[in-house]
Structure formats: C-alpha cells, structure tokens
Amino acid sequence: MSELPFRAPAQFEPLCFAEAAESSHWFVFSADRLLVEMGPLERPSDDLRVRARPAWARLPLQKNHNWLGAEPKRTLYLGRLGGVGCWAAELGPDAALPAGMAWEGLRPLFSVLDDDHFALAGRALQLLQWDRDHQFCGRCGAPTEARRDERVRVCPACKLSAYPRVAPAVMALVHRGKEILLARSPHFPAGMYSALAGFVEPGESLEQCIAREVAEEVGVQISNSRYFASQSWPFPHSLMIAFVCEWSSGEIRPQAGEIEEANWFEVLQLPKLPSKISIARRLIDAVCQEIREQT
Ligand SMILES: [Zn+2]
Picture 1 (cartoon, rainbow, N blue to C red):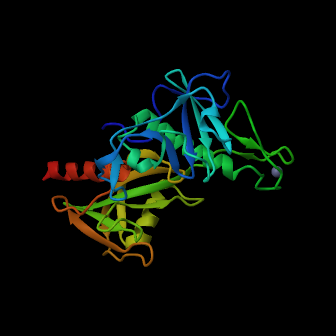
Picture 2 (cartoon, rainbow, N blue to C red; picture 1 turned 120 degrees about the horizontal axis):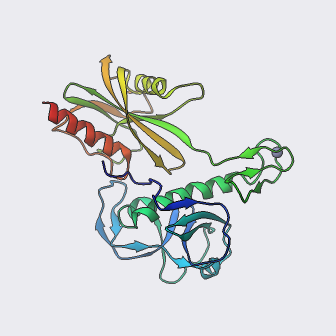
C-alpha cells in the first residue's frame, strides 16, 4: 500500500525550539488556508469539495517572518525536514497578501504541493489551532507558557499542562458477501457516499466504538472487526483508525439527522466515493479489490 496523505515524512525531526535563524520552509496560515506560491487554477480535482486545483504550488523558503510584511499572531517551530527548518505561523484575516502569493485550502493542494510539505502543513494547521486555543489555562484561567524542550503549554499558577490534542475516531466499512455498506451524511457533497465513522467516547475501546457507531448510525450489528490502517486527519485534529467488519444481523435504518441515506452497494456498482486524500477511499478500494478477487 502506498503511503497515506498526512503521514509524517521519514526525513522529518520534530523540534520545539530553533537554535539559530536559517533558511526555512514557512507554513503560514490564515484560518485554514495556507500561503503558497501558486500556479494557475486549472487541474480538475477528484475531491467533490474542490472545483479545481492549482497546476503547481510551493512553499516560501525564508530566514524569518519579515517577508510577510505583517507581525504574525503566532509562530511555532515545527522541526527539521531533511535538515531544513520548518516554521508554522498564523496571520490575521486582514493581513495583506505578500507579492506573488495566494491563500489556498489544504484539500486543493493535495498532490499539488510536495507530499512531505503537504503532510507538515496538516501538522502545522493542528499545532497552530492548539496554540491559539490554549493561551489560557482551562482550569484556573491564568495565561499559559510554552516550553522549549517539549510541545506543551503549562499554567504557571496551577501547573496544568495542555498538550496538543488528538481526537481518535474510528471508521468502519461493513461488508456482507459481495456488498459493502456505504452511507451519506447530510453535509457530504451531492451523490457522495462513504464508510461510517465516529469519535471514540471516554471509557470505550475501538472495537466497542465501532459496534456502537454502526448500530447507532444504521441499526446493523457487526462482528469480526479487523484493523486496516490509520491516518492523521487535520480537519480539525483527528486520528482516523479504519477497520473492516462483517455484517452479522439487522436491516439498515439510517439515524435521523446523522445519516441521510445508507445502502448496500455491489462492488461493481459503486456510487461517488471520497477523494484519495482520505483513508475512507483507501479502505473502500482495498475491500472492494479483496471482494472482487474472492469471487
Ligand atoms: Zn491554571
């Protein structure tokens, strides 16, 4: 299996503190859009949320943030990629665009931006959000402080530590003979179906979470959950953990408000599927191939 998008690059060393100013990759965000030097919008996209992709895009390589022409709201040192420093920065919504640059969402930059840079952009987006959301202690309200040796914000008054948060979520592709169960959430693009997914609750194992989510969302009982793969998912800060499981009983009853439609699909007659950016597509493709090979 080729590597999933957002996988940490092999040549990346995470660090929290830069020893010296040097030419570095800059991952500058305003809200959820990344600042890139970008070619014309012309390539079609396989992501139904994206109309077109830029023909090419690249990150700025700069020594410090002066080239931005505005003071960033925050900067975070991410570490080194192949020996080159990497910085994340956040600009306010009113910041002027540096000459020759453009703001672009991460989805259209998939397979356009260098894969390693794309993965680190996902990391940068999550860390900037964490830093923004933990400026004050959640327990006593005092301003928190960053540490140089560890990615954490600590409250000097009550010592509470706020580490970057990752929310585990399971994804389940249920199959029954030659069919797979796909569903539509109301916020999906028109016509698109995907595997079921949901966040893990406190006090629950991954296997219990899958059984609960599948039962809640479509009213079906499952067995034999088998781990498939996992993917960091920065929209906003999830870890998607994907499983294949077998239908054991029950008819489909979509959960009101959560599932607009759910159906069994034959592997040769599939609806529109999610983009290859997500583990959902990888999971669906792998299971369909397995079913086709068995029949
Ligand atoms: Zn505190």
